[in-house]
Image (cartoon, rainbow, N blue to C red; front, side, top):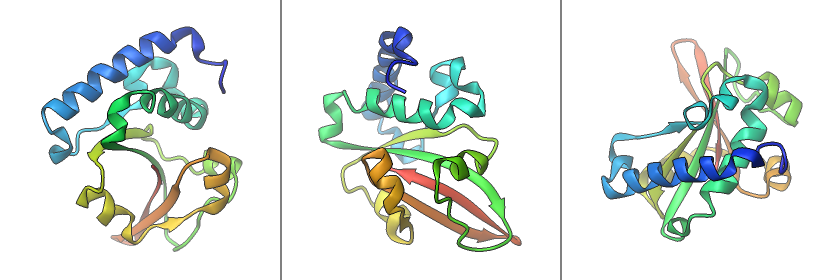
Length: 154
């Protein structure tokens, strides 16, 4: 992953930093402002790039010192299921289980109630925490006969 996108890393960092500044200056977490990875670069329009691309972009986000005061939340939407607790256990499972919406980033002040409430009922996925070297959670909400499922990376 490290060498794959480096050619555009300066462009990506510039785009990310402008978006971060806009969100922070205008308190846009209050309106759930998000940034999908394919908005940063069309390279990330294909599902095959979503996991590696999200993790690469997350590293670029976290280079910004503002994240000493703010949390970055990466949300990866998974396919709806009619059964509960179908948690991906491998990277291949995760890739096969991706929904049609590209992963997106959110910014919140540290300890913001939205993140706390979001993660309250989420399940920590230890094997992904080790692989991705960060906190990774699974959450699902039942809605009209199906479970809406997401991975949260913080």
